[in-house]
Length: 272
Image (cartoon, rainbow, N blue to C red):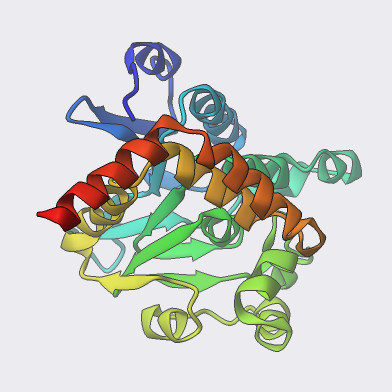
């Protein structure tokens, strides 16, 4: 798969909250780094709008998306940097939202759109992923994290409830009992706990995080793009859609040129 990044450059020209990284040597992926370190990458309306613009491009130009954060000076030692994924929604904006805003589903609509992107989404997470930041991570297909990661849903302590996916995605990921504990206590998970609960696929030192994310993207990129897209779409369909959806997906792939080319290449290698 290859992408023409000219149009993406135009899309991202005026971005303030996201830094996009893409390379013609890796045309099957883009990296979107949240970059509001002064507020620990709190997700505000500007960031939401920019994520929607990225999604719109990816829906037309299917590519793997790597989501990540940035670094900020450590509060106890400003000479050191610490990673930050996203500390949650912007509390200053959240404080002013009312019933009508909640019903618009600002973050939930965005995170569902990210979840539904044609190609896989990899969240590369360092530092805090709290509240809406955690819910953004739960919307990804894969989560690679550092030893410094901290996950949590502190919403009930702020007098609200998680409303951007944690209520049901966490239950799917870790089961009802653990999900309810995390939602009702605000418990913060460290890297080892997140790995034990299978909320993350792997743990790495901070310096190795992006290499790990790209290594996973490389493995995905080695597969047939159409097969990846069909598999992701069918995998996320509700139980009642199976096995009919599986058979429809396979029917599409059975007619693709890539299927014949890749299978013939496999047979040729076996002969040798």
